Image (cartoon, rainbow, N blue to C red; front, side, top):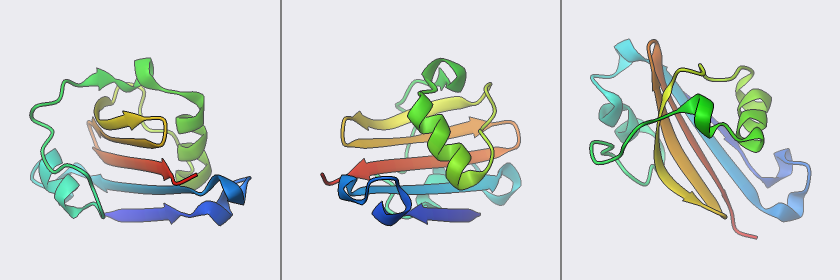
Length: 111
């Protein structure tokens, strides 16, 4: 499992007070998605069984994709299933589950 953390100084406008944490791992590293979430730092939820998956391709917002490309270096697969844990103007958190692994995204701002 790898974790990447980007604070406000790594975004274009420091005053935006943004924070982004990404975590990713191969499926073989964890028994299931909930096990992966338990290992993610400060994950809001450790159980996605009550969430309905949506295709990443239908969710993909340009800012999310840009953040993933900027800090992770490659986008997650378009056919990944997304489980959105939180989606508000100042806090976005989801886990993506795909054939080869898991990807956790947590962005928030205190501005």
